[in-house]
Amino acid sequence: LDLVRLTLYITNMPPKKSKAKAGKKEQAGKGTAEGDVEKKLEDLDVSDDSDSEDHDSKPVRRCQNKFGALGSDDDAENSEDSEKEGKSKGDDATKEVAPAKKVSHKEKKLMKKQSEYQKQLESLNKGKTLSEGDQFTVSQADKSAAQQIQQENAVDIKVDNFSISARGKDLFVNASLTITAGRRYGLVGPNGHGKTTLLKHIANRSLNIPPNIDVLLCEQEVVADDTPAVEVVLKADVKRTELLEEQKKLEDDAAQGNLKNQDRLTEVYEELQLIGADSAEARARRILAGLGFTREMQDRATKQFSGGWRMRVSLARALFIEPTLLLLDEPTNHLDLNAVIWLDNYLQVWKKTLLVVSHDQSFLDNVCTDVIHLDNQKLYYYRGNFSQFKKMYVQRRKELVKEYEKQEKKSSR
Image (cartoon, rainbow, N blue to C red; front, side, top):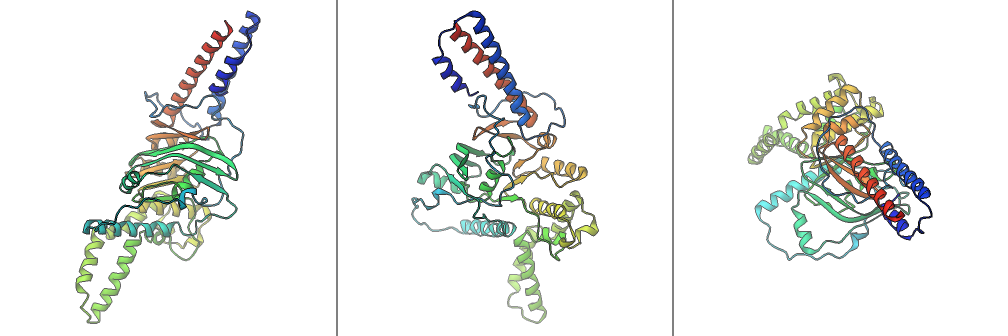
């Protein structure tokens, strides 16, 4: 029951008729409220495979939801809907533009770097578009001109008062998204309530994501063709691929006696050294090996792999490219135990920002520094892993039950 509803109910209820009746009502209310707490935890979309140690931790944001959180039966969203969501309502809004100013050399280099990285992400996300059958509606609070300027260089994500609906069904209503750079978040909540949809809208930039934050959602298996698995991973680094192609062309020109581009060839050598191009293949092979690929499998064409193994290649590619914000939706689904253990250890030292949806409590406990709880169409934030979140959630519900009982006693006097 929602605490607000209970308060209204208590306020408007008729005077008590007898002590015995009031006592029965109090006992029934207590049993129902405590049962709801257990039911909601059972409905959390996470398997409880292990018990973790107790830790003292406090939620960053106070949860304002009451008793109607985890156990709703409404099937608001199919988590396997098509790859990207609909356009934002605010896309056509007129924005205040700052006066043009001279761009410095440093700013030009930064813009070039961002453009190159965007090419990488576009190549990885190629083919991931919304189907017309997906009718998503997104709305969010407009930002002032000052906020827009501030967002240009923001390293954290802060989206206030956004709403998302799917085919007329509300998934998020005036929710707020807060993601701090360098932290690893686990997104938890009941099935069918919008976790996958939120990841897709973040990746699709339907929400106001700062432009200098590169976002990659690993959700599709790689294309089945003649390209070896290791080459698929290496080609994800678009800048390295382009520099190697330019290097080959300039070296061929030099071999034919054309030395006019010798200076540019020197620059290409320096750029390749700067990005660690020589060690890229070794790093790609280490990631593939960690995910279960033997050396022979790494050199095998992707068309010879099943969908599950091509999904592993896609995961290896995402880990190799290291986006600013990596989004993973059930990353352990296609992995065997050894690969899960490797991924667990790899992500524990992940330096960038991570947002992951997973059924595996042990994985969430080991990897996550924070938990985002999708509850009653809003997002609530807790510091700590999943086990710590679960303890805090139960404690908060117990406190609400006690408060409810106190109000019932007062109203029955």
